[in-house]
Image 1 (cartoon, rainbow, N blue to C red):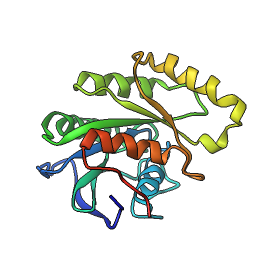
Image 2 (image 1 turned 90 degrees about the vertical axis):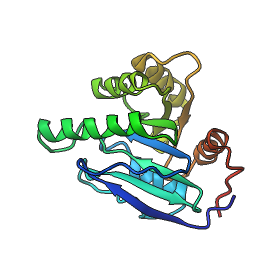
Image 3 (image 1 turned 180 degrees about the vertical axis):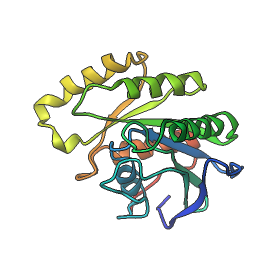
Length: 201
């Protein structure tokens, strides 16, 4: 399918009732400064539908982006660097957990990590938490364009070892600048949702 339209359809705060969309959903989790909004914009082929910010922790809600009235990309609140109280972070955590537990339509969770750095304790905790909630996260290693090509394999190895990934875990390097990895991510989403080949206009 060609991406004809992509809209921010539903925004859920900590007290919101989570929607039953009745459409396939794939969710994206990651640290506040890992490039999650840039990835989602890249996937939707939009410049600024998902709001990017120089201030980490801008996404404090679960944002549901509807694609072609057929599926949702779900942006989960960032973790790690957000300048909010521990109580606030715990509320976000409960909100994310509630979503992972209750969504009838969630097909996969993508966990974003920065390819330039070994996974942090927060990354590791999030990975284990997603596993604990019944999903095998697919890893997207962002900021690929910031690395020399010769460093990529070494960095991917550090991610696999740092997160202690299961042997068959998929890891996709991604660049918001060049969009390298975008088609691979869409092919994966396509196979997980059964919606047919996604083509970017």
